[in-house]
Length: 383
Image: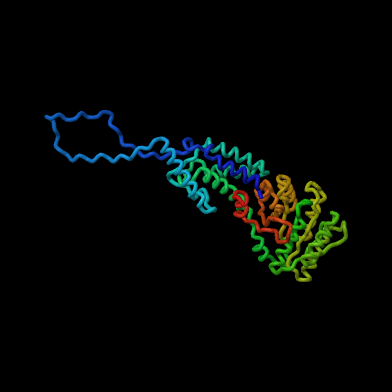
């Protein structure tokens, strides 16, 4: 997962010593040297012998090292620092290693790092506003601030990038289980998205998750336009043992949603999951259809299901659906095959709505509650 992004990031971090050269970047704290008098006073003559005072012992001289030995010692110290840095806990933030003395990073070499970081993120399909947000976070973490000398440049830059990405993702967390427990029943959840994103399978996974918590589910087959959509949802309902409400092909989707909700009320069912049509987001008929379902069903939660492989296309799709009906949360599918990772970073942040789950396989249990640290671990760390 995210192999392309991870490899490019690792190369960037390892080249930090090239971009942020220690002589150029760090303001070293040199010990103050005692002032040396310009002229040495002449020794007193015999006639002018001063009163006798105790003669201080000359300072003990440290053995002088050759340039080769100094370089070898410095290299050994760097290796020891790198080894210590590797032993630091994974959740250490860059701002936790700020100190009053140590390494200070200047602006010019930092700009080189940020320019390269921008290219890497854009190539990974990260939306430009999100790239700017991450760059801003890295700049604030690094510019002009001193860092503990026990950390290598590679470690400092990597922690700063992780912190910036973490701050972008943190606003996108959503406690679905906690939200579900606090709603009045029947709880109506509507799913929207483009055909081929794995929307229907994602609905089945949510149904399986809800039923595993002891709640009952009704599925509403409101995609009455796509050939096979009703049959596909029916197969999932049969496998999971939950009720499905459906009508004939080309029936009014909002009428199906209404029937499903009324069935849930009469039979005291807990959750209604509404599947919807997924033609292209530019289709005006589709948008009007979504708006009508919202007016009739009054869903408690509107979920956009996006294909993480679609990159910037998924972001544009989410923006259109959000503008039309007001998306409340996001599910990202095919995260296990997301070679770039840009959609995971961008889609929820761009529309300002949280990621509820990510789907990482075809089985009903292959759905993971979104967690920022889980995502950070897979984007940066070696598997």
